[in-house]
Image (cartoon, rainbow, N blue to C red):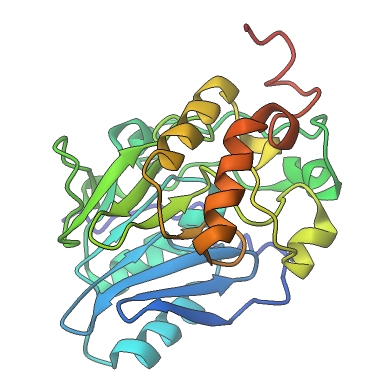
Length: 283
């Protein structure tokens, strides 16, 4: 594997911390959700075979490594890292972790330009309807990391490498190659940012982790028609529990009812009234 990786996230610590930062929650015996500042990473599996889903905020590698050692022990590294997408808060520590663990990274092929140094994401939209996080979004890093040949595209048959029983689902809208992960056996969903359980544009709600099933982060979702269809696709799976990229895990009627409302009232709940990626949309 190419060791000459480029870490555009180095030195770009973001001063955004929620009340849940550093806390972990065991959602099922083989599913652990760790909050890193304002975003979640997920550890899936058991000590002899586990995978990390998403890689947290910039400069968060030590936090994730410590949590992994506490859960699995010093000598049990993951088999792979799976990325739901490549925004800075989901790949912040991916270069450090991939090098430390010497493991491959998998993502949808449409995300690869943002993970191999070839393309920057479109600018976030500070004009979008929303709170202070949206206004501050131009300060967020959008330079791509470069994982070289360590990053690989997810297999076209929907299987998730090193995660038996799981399949990946293309859920674009927030980014072109965004994916969610689903396990049919117990209808567990790892949704990434296809929908979230805390409104990401409101600084107060982000810091306090106020629970609310909502659409993807408004200030950095560039394709709202696709985002709407992705939520419908995930709702049709009838998940029993979900871990989202931001906010607390949800399950049962809270999840079922919340997703139903989001599908039924997507334009009211999720879609901004105005913004760069909303104005001029076609109906």
